[in-house]
Image (cartoon, one colour):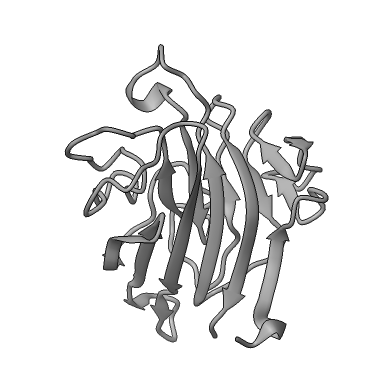
Length: 196
């Protein structure tokens, strides 16, 4: 591994590598090496194109909630492709809105969720879109996602952005955005390895 291309986005010590959408300081709770959603989406200051990303997250225990109200957040690759974060433990046939879905585009190939309050991992391999001379996409982005070590997306083609991101158009390089959807989802140990 070329360590010069690995960027630690969150190591548990500070939120210095993150900002709100408007560029102001990130305000999520930080305690015991863990950051937890409190107020507003946060965006990595680092940008990347082709890359391998690692994200660890923990769902809150919300037994009284169901569906999109149960531990909802999102990991936005390039700021425009959302990998859904949700407590979908026990869902027999996950859909395009369940955990590990590429939101509103592809359901995960299987449900790899752990129960609430257990740490889970996403390992995401993104090949950025390729653009022609006039800025038009000539090759769509391609993504593979492993959820808790299991392949939930295998070279999925991304013909468009998903809703709610930093941009509604694909980009050659972009940020990692973590979504505030009103639920106290926690994150730790986030890094990106640039592959371009």
